[in-house]
Amino acid sequence: MKETFSSVAVFQYSAEAQIIKGRFEAEGIETFLVDNHTIDTDPLVSNAIGGVKLKVRCEDRNRALQVLESISKYSVDDEGAQITCPKCHSSKVELFTSVKSVKSFFFFCISFLVNALPMHIKREYHCAHCNNKFELK
Ligand SMILES: [Zn+2]
Image (cartoon, rainbow, N blue to C red):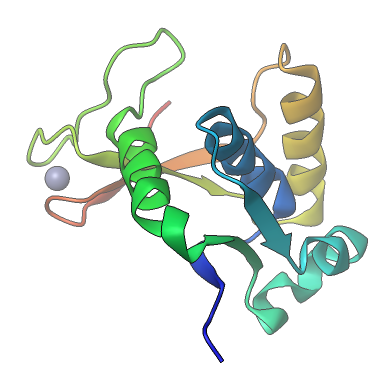
């Protein structure tokens, strides 16, 4: 049987997946989340079941990957300035939200919903060029 849907990204929490889903749908790409309800019920099982899978139709896969690439290309700080790697000065920097506890996950949800509160979570960036991981204050 021909596979109809293709996984393009995996997220630890469905809140992150929802952000990307919104971007895809703005581009007209139909998106499906798998296991997000299970993880919403108990965020701690996310690692065990492999995270929230973001799937698109196979024919949309290439376009979806382009959108993902353009999102990661535009990692900017709170003032909208391009973030560059402190080690190699590459601008190919991806944002990783590192939510390490249920408490910070709670803050993550609140700041995501309210969108006005400062982020209470540590934001970690990953350089696609030299693999350097760093944090911004
Ligand atoms: Zn770098």
